[in-house]
Length: 117
Image (cartoon, rainbow, N blue to C red; front, side, top):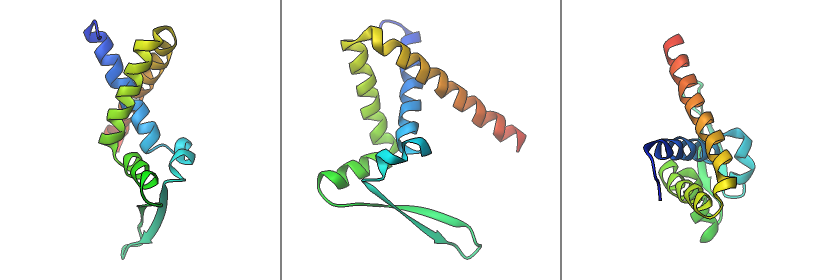
């Protein structure tokens, strides 16, 4: 169980960062590759758009759908982080703190870039 608001905030930022890592980041593309096929299309204006098509059927397609849905993956990431915190708090704490710091840093970077542009 969560004991403090600080823990809830740490979990929220850690879950945010882990979810983005799995769904969007290039570094975890190898995890998505068995389940997604990326299709590039060039629009009339010359801009390249990338679409995702699920590979396979059944469980493979289900995992592909999961990894393409930020909301769905976020629920599972939250459950995973909470579960490791319940069963292995000493090991989970550094992971949660690192992910939370990275999540906040990512949000700050997004805000800075928004105001610069």
